[in-house]
Amino acid sequence: MAGAGLEVHRLTKRFGGFMALHEVSIAVKPGERFGLIGPNGSGKTTLINCVSGSLPVDGGRIVFDGREITSLPAHRRTRLGLVRSFQIPKPFGSMTVLENLDIPLEYAAHERSDAADADAMEILRAIGLESKAHLRPAGLTQIEMRKLELARAMAARPRLLISDEAMAGLSHAEVDDILAILFGLNERGITIIMIEHIMRAVMRFSERIVVLDAGERIAEGTPDEIVRNPDVERAYLGE
Amino acid sequence: MRRIWILLAVALVVVGLGILLAALRVNPYVYFAGYVILQYVVIATAWNILGGYAGYVNFGTPAFFALGAYTAVFLVQTVRPPLPVLILAGGLVSALLGLGIGYLTLRLRGVFFSIATLALSIVLQTVIINWEFVGGSRGLSVIRPSGPPFGNYVTFLFTVMVGLAVVSVLVARFIERSWIGRGLAALRDNEEAAECMGVPTLRLKLFATTVSGFLLGVAGAPFPYYVTFVEPNSAFALDYAVNALAMPMIGGTNSWVGPVIGAVLLGTAQQLATVTISSEMNLFIVGVVLVAFVVLAPEGILGLVRRLRGR
Image (cartoon, rainbow over all chains, first blue to last red; front, side):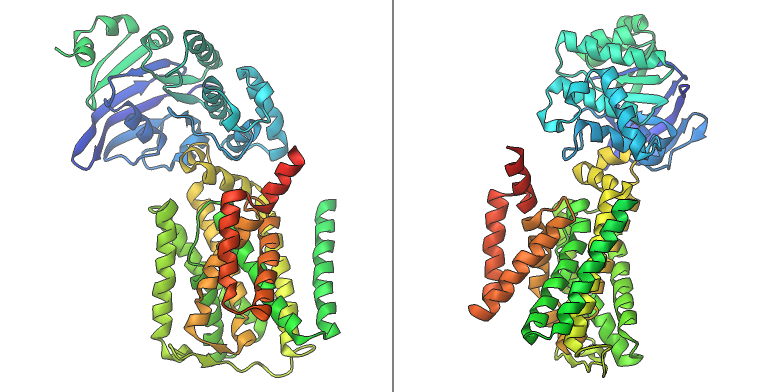
């Protein structure tokens, strides 16, 4: 399935008097590897929550694959192929790893329940969780939990995948592991938005990067341009 | 397909046994107690569809049960339709209330939802107390229709309850094994993640609250004919709220069998305590057993069995 593009027009989100996002616009092309960075509290996760439908917006428009989705509930966006993973893994604790994948296969990809198990197993094999298929998520390690989070997102058959800090707290080798998975997905045509604090990973992965600071977009460019941008340096390090 | 036939056969056998027991005319108390236990099978099963499968703990069981009962009282006072109509009407009115609390889940989760359902029960009881037509606070005598289809009226109602219990359990089992049950389990585990994985959480929650409400109303509708005197304190009794929650917890909330086991064990224990010790011992037993289970076997009897088999 081909990747899909995403356009966010002048998105605004307030929490009471606090302006979390102020007229933020981004445009992600189909099949692109897109990085979203910014200091803590800059509004990255809020932006993702608005795009995925977990939070209602206070202004602006969201267009996915040429279709306006601003007021669509989250599960409908997922069914269209706009899928996110969570920063803090949120597995379905009462189910096995395999059953965790059956949910999106059945609900988002509309597979029959008897076919779902085989496909779930295939995804687990691709991501390296095959041997844990029949364990409960509570028995997984941190890296396995992150992989489950990604595997479950893959089971929703994304055309655009938003990976929200999938690598925070992982070791060097584990980061490479996750990166390889994301590169692999992108090669199959899936658009990927990566939100990450690990600069080494974002810089290597992204074709284009947007930087948020205090709810506003302060820079956009290739990884090289971003590294040399004085505004970005100021946002991260101060004056 | 074959499993469905086996299931239906088992259901028919249970109903058949109920009719047989009704025809045997043993000590009348057996039917009286049996009715209460079966009523609890319906209530616990209904509660578990929302509380166990979807994870929304409803403290307002008396509201739904009494709404079913008072719908029946209202109809008996006006048009006096046959019993099946009363049961259906009681179920439908409670289902509407269920749909209403389903929309509450948009804003209220976890303990706040539970508090709201508890408040709902109190509000509804106040309304009934002030509604003279259905008896107000003094209550109302309900005259049973003359000439039940077979036996006397208590054995007849007992048989009806056997049927209702079987239907409720079949409904719960169907939900649990279907895509609906899997979706409810996902939203119980993590509502945000479920929604983001394509599960229409609101629609499933509305379904669960409506079906649960319907079955609770169904359990309450024959109540006026059973007790023949309905008053708010017995229809809105705390026992329903506590038992509806305790029985599935003791049996196990993850499967349709759990509430059945819990209702039969706890219901029987309560009936025995009522005749042998005192009627006040009812809730005491529930309390002690519930605390013991929450501490020692949080997954109920089914969880205990699974753990013993696993080792």
